[in-house]
Length: 440
Image 1 (cartoon, helix red, strand yellow):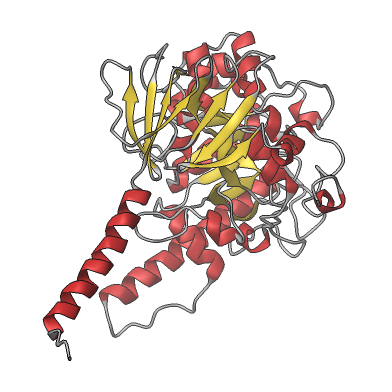
Image 2 (spheres, helix red, strand yellow):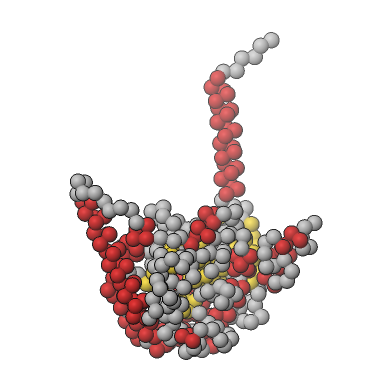
């Protein structure tokens, strides 16, 4: 006996099978994670004593109280009673990943890309996650007037640096430009020997970039005109002139700060002042220029002479004048695992607690043009957050979990992660851990 089944039947069967796979996959992707019972510090908005945080895939679905946030059926509920949840920390000036920039051939090297030298297996990336960092601006060093292009990274788990990239809306890779003045870049020729010569070299290079920009525009307006020969360094500086790249400028002394502000005024580039040890001396001028500052706190003496007048009241002085003020580690100047202490030092010296926590999160997001995506517990933003054992500025508080885009990248209860947080044998290099107690 022969049974005949029509071809449409097979099509329906196949379609049903594929739809079932798609639907199951969709359900798996859209599983809601609910964190209940913790104190939430959204940064943008008041703290919530008994909060509900809903995460779906890589985004924040809802933030609120049990009375105004409904937990959907099928959600995975995490009881985090007694804990504190706040956005992931943002370091606007870091050197984790062993990145390097320009060499000794010239003082200005905008063509250099720091991400061509980043090692994502660097132990300091693991330690940064242990410190609650979820987003970083990795910079080349400060031994040049311009040492290269910086890179903004999400500290996701990744096998290569591309796995950590953040992309702009136009598809380009997010990053800025690292510049410096003061002592670091003053050396033997071809480097400048004085502060005045340093400023002159920078001015000359930006004038060249303006001329290159005009030639590019002329060729674009007139097809009969040939564009200039491609110059990678000038291309990067044109991006600076067009506002596509922010200048992150290492500077300490008040006179060096004023030099940077003059250059900004002349060439119109977007600017974040980094370090600004003597910001308290020219806080009015910084505020008038409407320039954000990323500051660092040191808890031990020493360092370079030009930073001798660094003052813990920097944060309070800048905050009182309405300057967007964030923090950075300059890791390893400050170990990323202790980044939250910077906010504590700032509060101790007069900065408001809300302003200091804003500086650890949203201020950094603004400086990296990522404030629409991260920096606060806000519906629709990336699910970048940390779970704390207590109040964020207490010396007794531990960071227990770090989440990047809805995925846990650090868990203090995991012995391997605890090693990164606490130190000890195997914590200095990812390779050493395999010679330690976790091999078997």
